Length: 225
Image 1 (cartoon, one colour):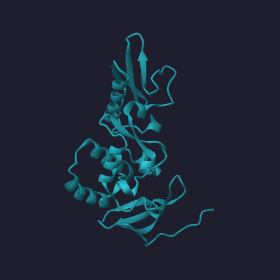
Image 2 (cartoon, helix red, strand yellow):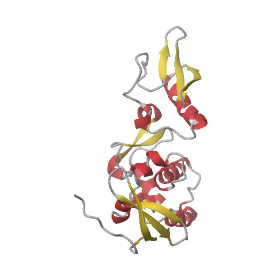
Image 3 (cartoon, one colour):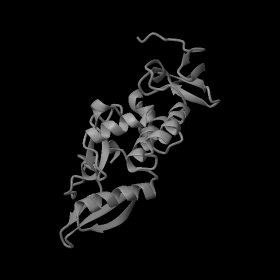
């Protein structure tokens, strides 16, 4: 049986632990009420505190980002947006996709979360291109160099759980032989939305992702597609 460790009063980065929340994560660790140096309070997974995966409410990374943006001049670029979105999914519990990332214990390595330049250099050295998206090799692992790669949108959205009529390898996309086009559908709250028909599979995959954003608010993680 795992021994209980009282974190009350301890400091982890910018966090000061105020009290135990009383709830547990799906992985068995306790959640804790924490106060950040900037004044924000938040419920934080105790294991993330002890392992250094959570060091602030996000203000530290934002402070560093603001400072480094002035130096690297890449704010607003596609790669910078990918980096920023990656961190929000993992650390911002108000983000619509947080429960599928940070809420599951998915984090961003310290090397990347505190310095966009490190992420940028890794991306360029590992084949980044504007038609590729970042993908975690182990879907339960963190965003870190050893667990990430750049792949096409088609590859990222590929899903093994496809219906009997699916011929694309992607959820919600199948080839309509009668019309000679790729049919795209999306299920939302028990309703089927017909997104449209497209000439190529890549166009269909892109349309599916755009439909997810429009109707759900964010792109579905691979394990939910």
